[in-house]
Image (cartoon, rainbow, N blue to C red; front, side, top):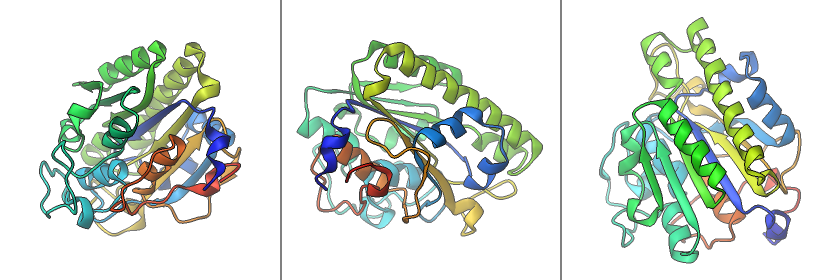
Length: 281
């Protein structure tokens, strides 16, 4: 793993999570901004969520580099661990990427901006510089763009609650769901434009993923429509127009961010950096 020099130019990482964005929909969706990032970077549409294919358990796994039997959050709306976690940091929960950054690089700035209030129980707020819960996607987007343009944040996580709402209210794989994906794509376009406007595009890695997919009006089950999530990375040192064939689990996301930023991962983390996405690893 001595390829860190390749991404040393990357001084900023932005992880964008869209709730309920199933991989199954992307080939059929009108999402030019997302697909442009796929062309400029590396991606998989067969990354896997953990079981159950629900929200809190998977957002926790993504940020904590491990699965539910290790970090303890096991349900859709977990607010505290249902299983005793393997370890607990001074921040009160299993270590996430945020506490790794704070403990190993205390001078850098981080941000967590989220639409669903459930995210607030899965992060170490005392270890994060900017914590913002926005009642609407638009408020979250505005705060994220503002933070990007400030140009000072090393790691930023943005959670947006669509297209999950449409999936529940109307249904996955419906015309309305695909219409919402056009709105999702417009937001991706705004975020990419903000990165370019900041003048830091050459130093910024953008990652996009989701907590789960869905089937009919729900999720939580064992179908691939629910388990397959998109995993996309674009920026300096990343292979271009590359389809990743290695297995990716959602907890590999945290491990990949740790690798990019040169952080030592806890022994308890089960995730591995997605090395196949980088030009040198």
